[in-house]
Image 1: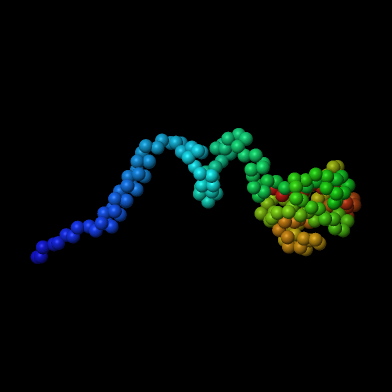
Image 2 (image 1 turned 90 degrees about the horizontal axis):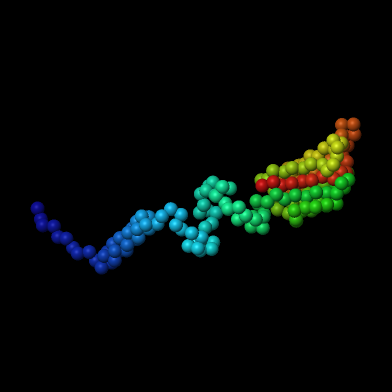
Length: 180
């Protein structure tokens, strides 16, 4: 058998090995010397932590300081959007969360446009002060032909019905909410 010849490593190989050792050693050092919760807010650059970098259910209500999140800091998709019409009116807005429009249709019908996509939100519609004489229903405009917002993911059509003694559509006040 022949004698094996070992070559010396090239300078590039030596630099690569040195860099590898420093990287592994630095990570190991940080892992051993950094104590739990030692990385503070001041250590993190603004915008460094994004939604995609946070594990599911990692941030829960118990981990958020009281008052740390105000409604102004929430995205629109995390807020309830609502509108309330005047008593006896299907289209005159008494109060709202902002950006909502109500377009009256035929008697007892109105289209509520929330100004943002509500297709994946819970919807609640209730008649105002009706003492049991009015029932409210709704349909998403992506499922029915709404008069002013056909196929719109932002809108619903509201229907207000009289009681069983008078089951026709009626003009009455209502409240509508799109809940995250």
